[in-house]
Length: 294
Ligand SMILES: Nc1ncnc2c1ncn2[C@@H]1O[C@H](COP(=O)(O)OP(=O)(O)OP(=O)(O)O)[C@@H](O)[C@H]1O
Picture 1: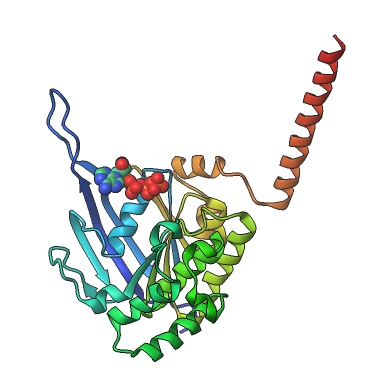
Picture 2 (picture 1 turned 90 degrees about the vertical axis):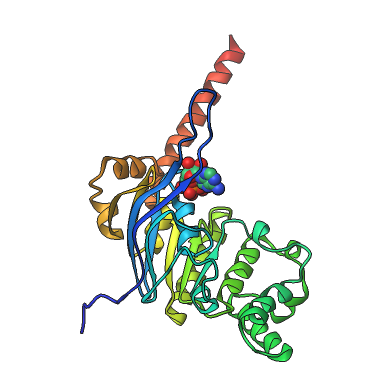
């Protein structure tokens, strides 16, 4: 039916994560509650962004959703399946459904491994394809993310930052996941490269029906890519809503503060910033000239 919302593919209820705290000289260690009962719903084929300042718990949440970090309490339902966090060996099939892309592909790609081997390993571990079939699939995926088949024989250091992020995305997609957790995936890239990687992510989402949790502190990027946004502060969700609503009518003071501290990407605002900058430079130059005269 037109207007009906797509089903929820990933749901978190009351997610809590405590890290052991440090003991002081006269006090016992208090656990650090990085997540204090976070609820979230990600709808199939959509992008839910998680925003907030550094330390608010975004990455902790991302790792829990990717099933690579245990939660202390709460419920997690992935594609209709309740995930039992106490089970150390979650099924391979379940793990294949959710993949993560980190901010720094330098950190996540083994520098001594050809990228063809890194991508092929995902297939080796998760499928019964033979070596020839794996090579074909790796080449197809490299082409799909805008690289070339023969790039498979190169090492990570032979690529630019944007290309490495494309490789990280390709690797995440090798096993046909349904959900990608994107943890600051474009924060380390130049603006023009950011735009290309965001376009690629949008294309892949349409093509494969992927659902994204997009973790970012950069609201201008979030505005471009999100369907829904949740704002976190100190391990709690302080506001959530459609992207349009959050940016047009932020209701929580923290969201307003976040928005106010983000430079606008509106062309008029950029022009005004540049004009102010030129004015300041001109004033500084004339003061210097004046000082020199004195
Ligand atoms: N492995 C860990 N051990 C102990 N404390 C941790 C660990 N990882 C995160 N924390 C703490 O949990 C809280 C949330 O951290 P987290 O990295 O999730 O925040 P974040 O919003 O992703 O920040 P950033 O944007 O800087 O990555 C912080 O207080 C952090 O110090």
